[in-house]
Image 1 (cartoon, rainbow, N blue to C red):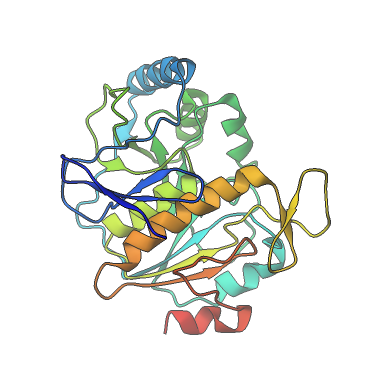
Image 2: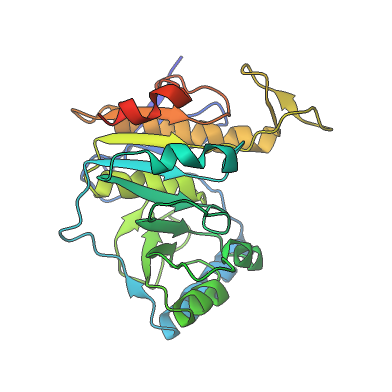
Length: 276
């Protein structure tokens, strides 16, 4: 049974199967994340990163006149490299929002409109490409400062957003907020909503694999994943639940993770037609 919680601030939240409260980000109220996904050590790191990024002159994200009707959020999930031709065939007006290691693996005859990164740890450097293509990058102000610094030094434009206030930590930055739950796909979903996207497709946004591995769980589509990835999946599902409630919005998923309750699976043959 779906559980909805209303908060005195005017926010409302959906409780996911992973016991995470996912906020309705479509309403115009002062945003608040009522979960506690971070530790005191995390807060110390966030503050250090934000101060370092401020010293490195990280510009703040402003939506302004940027508007898109359609967008695809791309991750480097199961069979990503085999499916890149599908991205090349999408209509030209579809904005590409890339996440995770997509840019490192990018060999697609199509531009990336936004590359979203929000990893605060040094492993964030694994998202830095070795090629010379550096599309506009949207980062959390808490993102690893070395990544931000290096990306800018290589000629990339980097713009920062502030993750939604958690109640336990306050950012020194004043910028556009995005609900990100420490996940770039979540940040990309809220970014798409801010950009006015009404047709949204998730593409390879999964952490699935073919064969059984220790501690892995089998999914209904026959692929496998680890339990910790199911938490991320449930949070993304909660965000898509709220997004779909916006009038005129159409959302689909072409990924190999678990199916979403509120979002239809779009087959390879249907991907292009989804945007027509």
